[in-house]
Image (cartoon, rainbow over all chains, first blue to last red):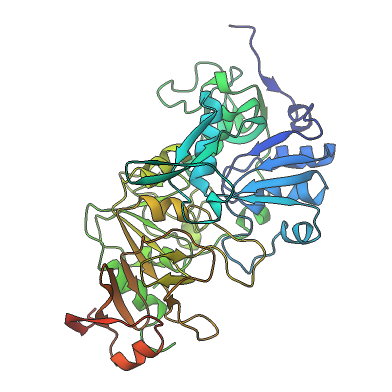
Length: 238
Length: 217
């Protein structure tokens, strides 16, 4: 065990080998938990024809701007605020970007299923909506359900707070969000962390993502504040 | 806006929440209900947090502690964090007592449309379908009419649906309506608003509750 070391030196090394046409999951929700440095590094490497899987336009913007993306699978094909500038819109309207929109819970469960070795499952969410279009259905008791397929990832780019060289990860507050789920669904999971710690330093009761799901760990600078605070809605006190 | 302000809509909605209830506030106007939530109500957000405190002020703000609407929130004793698979178990597994959601349209039978308008090429489903399916009670809060002055409460939704037959209660700037098997029952009227006025801006015919009364705060 002592020779295992998943830590790499730079974000560019961490995202090396992400090939043209790969399916890449991106953790985070808004700025929180989004692997900013990995996304910038990947956008510089400019792989072509990626299918990106994430939760909001924030996860996709650098890769779309670099022309890396063929398809986006996401529950938010625009920001929650319809007036916010949407990086998906122009390439979508030009026919350069395919968009699959789906319920966030279905996305999470498809990822979890992929990680758990379950090829497909029946799910009631989306019955009577566009989600069911073209899909097989089955009724259990009174409950009509849609057959949903697992969504395996070639790579997951995730963000954690601390990691060790074995790949054990802990997160910070709501920056945990989708990261542990992306981690289990990918053949290769790459974690950007604020801090790399010695093996044994993480409280084993507190480890959220055990190292078995993680293949590369890289310490990276926190993202710039103007980026993280963009879109944050400051309280309207009443 | 005629009738209640947006804050008063939220205040009225908050009166449906009781201590000990597990509640999700949807994106948009519903997140503002957090400003009025009674003590002891346990708020859930789909990005993996339960039991969070009030919306953060600017000096309390931490960008890694936000709700599903990207609003900064605060820590308080009893808060817990979890990943989104658990967050959606709570939503889809019927563990939440109430979800308060926004709406573009609600039908006479409780169909909900709240993720894409006709102006948009791309929409935002987010966790709305999961909540609409899984929460034990769905309260919709919205302005009674859309920005063109057309009713949001309609016979049949024309916008893409979020879910069919899920809405229990509708609270608008004009009134509170319960969706019943008999139809839309008008329960409360905002101060200074007439029944005729409400009916004029509501596409299906409303049924007057035997206990119809003016809204109280």
